[in-house]
Amino acid sequence: MHFSVFITPLVLIGSVAAKQCLNITVPVSISARNGVFNIPTLQGNADATTFAQNLTSIRGNFTQEALLGYETVAGQYDVNVKFCKPDAENGTNPTVQVLTHGLGFDKTYWDLPFNDYNYSYIDVAVDHYGFCTLSIDRLGEGNSSKADPLSVLQAPAEMSALYELTMMLRNGSLPNVPQAFNKVVHVGHSFGSALSYLLSVMHPTASDGLILTGFSQNGSFLAATVASWDVKLARLNQPLRFGNISYTAVSQALSPLDNLTKRIASNLAKYNVTLGEVLQYSQTTDFGDLLAGLQPEQLPKMADLPSGYLTWTDAGSNQFAFLLPEFFDPSILQFAESSKFPFTLGELLTIGSAPMMSPMFKGPVQIVTGSEFSNLVVCKVKLTIYRTRCDLLRW
Image (cartoon, rainbow, N blue to C red):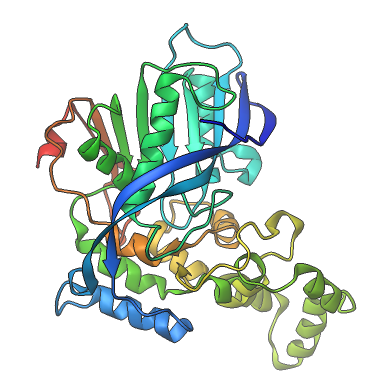
């Protein structure tokens, strides 16, 4: 296969050693058995709410009700990845971890630039333990190719892309990574864990081990999660990042309004409204999302998305689903909200599509899930960790 590759070399210095990283855009051919769903095109946020109401309804299984059948989806897409290795590799046959993010994120989830990379999983895995890593922008997200959010961007298609990348690592054909890896471990978060688990079902010899974080085969939390998100069209929620509004036009319109917030606050002070309250409003409501993208580091990555790309409504929805009070840095919430990424109709409809068992997978499995749920999907730092070879996959 001929590859047209865009590469950006990165050298990031850690506290112990330096990791060497490459950003690579990799053409990947996928083939998957996707569902055909009878979902009308969403015209606005009210339609997004209706979809969420149907998906979370206790009166029946909306996914099954909307399913018309199945079709094979095939094509070539670009998947953006970041490959990192230690400055001094640990042995001649290192293990590579394939890192797959969940809904609402991109691959920077694993190497978060917040607070000088203090929360970087990759820094620890590479610099401290000598692993190689391949973090991916899932198909349809981040810098990877966009696709139809209902018919293409479903769990089976995204797992197909994950499988193809895995095979490239194994046979040494990943562009500009001239090495074949004998040991490949798949690490996922949330929906990324679901894809890694699905990979073990469909291709049980593709992975040598699974680390599934934020993962459970008990799907009873999903309805509450989607309800708490108060889903909106991504293009309307953050129009500068996901819509078709011109960043230049907005900047020009706002340029004469220097110190706009202070001027507003000055007027509101007459009514005993403080600047802090104004900032609190702008940071914790969807007004803050409306402004996301005004800073240079927030320039659009996924502009002009179709209406089947969705997101949660604001920082409150983000916290309610993912962050338990007293166990996260409050400033990271604002960072996470302004830099969030969307999810799709197809992903929500197929998030629970994997079978309950993966009897043919023989590798070790580690499941990391919080011990205390805030009703939903993410929990406090205290973790319950399971280690087994495959028993948990045979429930």
